[in-house]
Figure 1 (cartoon, helix red, strand yellow):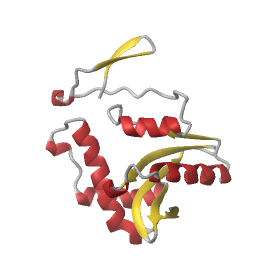
Figure 2: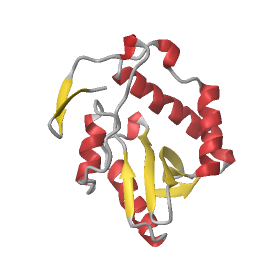
Figure 3: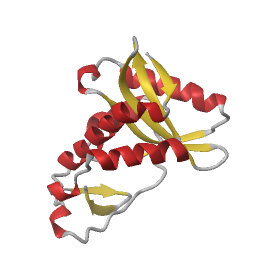
Figure 4: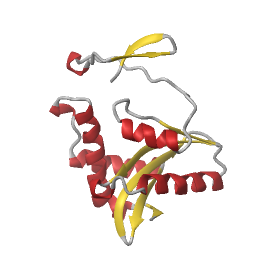
Length: 166
Protein backbone atom coordinates (compact mmCIF):
# COMPACT_ATOMS: atom_id res chain seq x y z
CA UNK A 1 0.00 0.00 0.00
CA UNK A 2 1.22 3.51 -0.78
CA UNK A 3 -0.07 7.08 -0.61
CA UNK A 4 -0.69 9.14 -3.74
CA UNK A 5 -1.55 12.83 -3.73
CA UNK A 6 -5.07 13.28 -5.09
CA UNK A 7 -5.97 15.47 -8.05
CA UNK A 8 -9.35 16.66 -9.29
CA UNK A 9 -9.51 13.41 -11.30
CA UNK A 10 -9.99 11.52 -8.02
CA UNK A 11 -13.11 13.53 -7.13
CA UNK A 12 -15.76 10.86 -7.77
CA UNK A 13 -14.08 8.03 -5.87
CA UNK A 14 -12.82 10.06 -2.91
CA UNK A 15 -16.04 12.11 -2.63
CA UNK A 16 -18.00 8.89 -2.19
CA UNK A 17 -15.62 7.96 0.63
CA UNK A 18 -15.98 11.41 2.21
CA UNK A 19 -19.75 10.94 2.10
CA UNK A 20 -19.49 7.59 3.89
CA UNK A 21 -17.04 8.95 6.49
CA UNK A 22 -19.11 12.00 7.40
CA UNK A 23 -22.38 10.09 7.54
CA UNK A 24 -20.70 7.40 9.64
CA UNK A 25 -20.05 10.14 12.20
CA UNK A 26 -23.71 11.20 11.94
CA UNK A 27 -24.78 7.59 12.62
CA UNK A 28 -22.41 7.31 15.59
CA UNK A 29 -24.04 10.39 17.10
CA UNK A 30 -27.63 9.56 16.09
CA UNK A 31 -27.90 12.86 14.25
CA UNK A 32 -31.21 13.65 12.54
CA UNK A 33 -31.14 12.88 8.82
CA UNK A 34 -31.32 16.57 7.82
CA UNK A 35 -27.77 16.94 9.17
CA UNK A 36 -26.38 14.18 6.98
CA UNK A 37 -24.05 15.06 4.11
CA UNK A 38 -25.08 14.71 0.45
CA UNK A 39 -22.85 13.53 -2.40
CA UNK A 40 -22.76 17.00 -3.97
CA UNK A 41 -21.66 18.47 -0.62
CA UNK A 42 -18.88 15.89 -0.32
CA UNK A 43 -17.75 16.68 -3.88
CA UNK A 44 -17.51 20.38 -3.02
CA UNK A 45 -15.66 19.49 0.16
CA UNK A 46 -13.11 17.42 -1.78
CA UNK A 47 -12.51 20.30 -4.22
CA UNK A 48 -11.92 22.67 -1.31
CA UNK A 49 -9.65 20.19 0.50
CA UNK A 50 -7.28 19.76 -2.46
CA UNK A 51 -6.93 23.57 -2.59
CA UNK A 52 -6.25 24.19 1.12
CA UNK A 53 -4.54 20.96 2.14
CA UNK A 54 -3.28 17.62 0.93
CA UNK A 55 -5.59 14.71 0.17
CA UNK A 56 -3.84 11.40 -0.27
CA UNK A 57 -5.48 8.27 -1.60
CA UNK A 58 -4.41 4.96 -0.11
CA UNK A 59 -3.62 2.68 -3.06
CA UNK A 60 -3.23 -1.10 -2.98
CA UNK A 61 -2.51 -2.77 -6.33
CA UNK A 62 -4.12 0.11 -8.28
CA UNK A 63 -7.24 0.03 -6.04
CA UNK A 64 -8.04 3.06 -3.90
CA UNK A 65 -8.80 1.61 -0.47
CA UNK A 66 -9.11 4.87 1.45
CA UNK A 67 -7.90 8.42 1.84
CA UNK A 68 -6.45 10.84 4.33
CA UNK A 69 -6.69 14.61 4.48
CA UNK A 70 -3.94 16.71 6.04
CA UNK A 71 -3.82 20.45 6.49
CA UNK A 72 -0.83 22.57 7.53
CA UNK A 73 -1.57 25.04 10.33
CA UNK A 74 1.76 26.77 10.37
CA UNK A 75 5.34 26.22 9.42
CA UNK A 76 5.86 23.17 11.64
CA UNK A 77 2.42 21.80 12.59
CA UNK A 78 -0.08 19.77 10.55
CA UNK A 79 -3.53 18.39 11.33
CA UNK A 80 -4.74 15.01 10.16
CA UNK A 81 -8.30 16.06 9.48
CA UNK A 82 -9.62 12.71 8.24
CA UNK A 83 -8.54 9.14 7.68
CA UNK A 84 -10.91 6.74 5.96
CA UNK A 85 -10.53 3.08 4.99
CA UNK A 86 -13.19 1.35 2.86
CA UNK A 87 -15.18 -1.27 4.81
CA UNK A 88 -13.78 -4.21 2.82
CA UNK A 89 -10.21 -3.18 3.73
CA UNK A 90 -10.65 -2.45 7.45
CA UNK A 91 -8.83 -4.44 10.12
CA UNK A 92 -6.14 -5.43 7.61
CA UNK A 93 -3.47 -2.96 8.73
CA UNK A 94 -4.09 -0.23 6.15
CA UNK A 95 -4.65 2.42 8.82
CA UNK A 96 -1.29 1.67 10.42
CA UNK A 97 0.45 1.57 7.04
CA UNK A 98 -1.11 4.89 6.04
CA UNK A 99 -0.15 6.50 9.35
CA UNK A 100 3.44 5.21 9.07
CA UNK A 101 3.78 6.64 5.55
CA UNK A 102 2.15 9.91 6.64
CA UNK A 103 4.69 10.18 9.49
CA UNK A 104 7.52 9.83 6.96
CA UNK A 105 5.97 12.44 4.64
CA UNK A 106 5.46 14.94 7.46
CA UNK A 107 8.98 14.47 8.85
CA UNK A 108 10.43 14.93 5.35
CA UNK A 109 8.49 18.22 5.10
CA UNK A 110 10.00 19.41 8.39
CA UNK A 111 6.74 19.09 10.33
CA UNK A 112 7.46 18.76 14.06
CA UNK A 113 3.94 17.91 15.30
CA UNK A 114 0.88 16.21 13.84
CA UNK A 115 -2.49 16.77 15.49
CA UNK A 116 -5.66 14.71 15.13
CA UNK A 117 -9.20 15.17 16.42
CA UNK A 118 -11.30 12.09 17.19
CA UNK A 119 -15.05 11.82 17.64
CA UNK A 120 -15.29 10.41 21.20
CA UNK A 121 -17.63 7.61 20.14
CA UNK A 122 -15.14 6.40 17.49
CA UNK A 123 -13.15 4.16 19.83
CA UNK A 124 -11.47 2.20 17.01
CA UNK A 125 -9.99 5.39 15.58
CA UNK A 126 -8.89 6.56 19.02
CA UNK A 127 -7.17 3.22 19.66
CA UNK A 128 -5.34 3.44 16.32
CA UNK A 129 -4.12 6.99 16.94
CA UNK A 130 -2.91 6.18 20.45
CA UNK A 131 -1.12 3.09 19.13
CA UNK A 132 0.52 5.26 16.46
CA UNK A 133 1.97 7.61 19.08
CA UNK A 134 -0.66 10.30 19.58
CA UNK A 135 -0.25 10.48 23.35
CA UNK A 136 -0.39 14.19 24.18
CA UNK A 137 -3.69 15.88 25.01
CA UNK A 138 -3.40 19.11 23.04
CA UNK A 139 -6.77 20.85 22.89
CA UNK A 140 -10.22 20.16 24.23
CA UNK A 141 -13.02 21.08 21.87
CA UNK A 142 -16.27 21.98 23.62
CA UNK A 143 -19.62 21.95 21.85
CA UNK A 144 -22.85 23.84 22.47
CA UNK A 145 -25.95 22.47 20.70
CA UNK A 146 -28.69 24.88 19.66
CA UNK A 147 -30.73 21.96 18.34
CA UNK A 148 -31.64 20.11 21.53
CA UNK A 149 -32.09 16.85 19.60
CA UNK A 150 -28.31 16.71 19.34
CA UNK A 151 -27.77 16.71 23.11
CA UNK A 152 -26.35 13.58 24.75
CA UNK A 153 -26.57 12.29 28.31
CA UNK A 154 -23.36 10.23 28.60
CA UNK A 155 -20.85 12.02 30.80
CA UNK A 156 -17.10 11.91 31.32
CA UNK A 157 -14.67 13.60 33.70
CA UNK A 158 -11.95 15.57 31.91
CA UNK A 159 -9.43 17.53 33.95
CA UNK A 160 -11.75 17.47 36.97
CA UNK A 161 -14.73 18.75 34.94
CA UNK A 162 -17.85 16.77 34.14
CA UNK A 163 -18.84 17.08 30.49
CA UNK A 164 -21.32 15.36 28.18
CA UNK A 165 -19.80 13.17 25.47
CA UNK A 166 -20.95 13.96 21.93
